[in-house]
Length: 182
Image 1 (tube, rainbow, N blue to C red):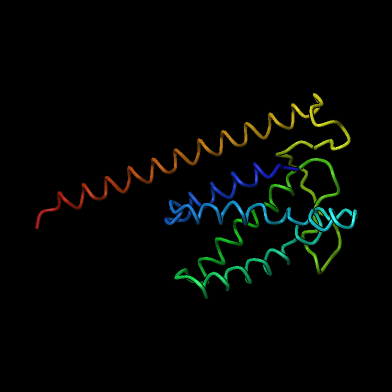
Image 2: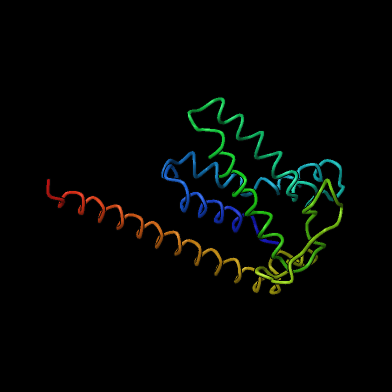
């Protein structure tokens, strides 16, 4: 499964790519928080010793519920509108589900909960399996860390290219508007 770093970078990339307000630090923080929120299901495990990871928080049903509630709270307490906030939140939360779906190993995710308890996993793999039974510094983790590093570098490079492209287009549009005869 991807680490919280990969989920966080994905959230940051989505915010930078689609949201003009992403330059505001709290929007970037929000994007990172929502992109990793599905993994907060480990918290009950700390108390109960029951494995709760990759449970119902990794489903489309919970993604809709979480996104609806959080977006309603934000729309009520800020100047952000509900629908764009909902779409951004769903996209961010959905990115977590997509990355976990594209991970090798494990039992998959309960994508259709509460309709079905079946777990789903893609045959297309973006991230290799993590071997938790090995020690933290075991060489088997080099492959996983290499995939994470490549994913992060490519995504951050893509963000910088997209941002540069948008800036150049905006600059060109302003120049074109200034050249128009009256």
